[in-house]
Length: 182
Image (cartoon, rainbow, N blue to C red; front, side):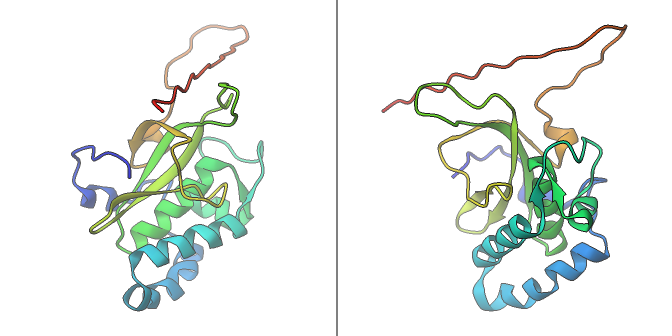
């Protein structure tokens, strides 16, 4: 379970430009409204994560940092941040607090971590706290996920932010070292 950041969960019910629920999202979540009372929040969250994994194909290079949850669902493709935004939009429309997480996904047993940043979402479940969902990979986050920041959306938790002036080519490289206590 992710650590408590001290912010009240209802704060994460706010829609943003990335997570605004349009007609497509409202249609997608409608069957889940009835399921909340019958199956409970956790089962609904797993169902949402699964359907978003199925409906939004992971396709790098087809969206950018301005893409919204509604656009990803409408087009049927996106990257991890699009999956996270769609999950947030659905959760918040159902009245379930949810937040965006940026970080890295450890991908290897030889000590090397992923070369690119990753994004996933967390939803608040009473009696459990924050539960992590990676809709892009169709799994719940594990100890292999390295958290950098949480926020309402990409804008609030982007892994890198800055201002660039002048011409030339810009490059960035990242190295993350994950060490186990075990």
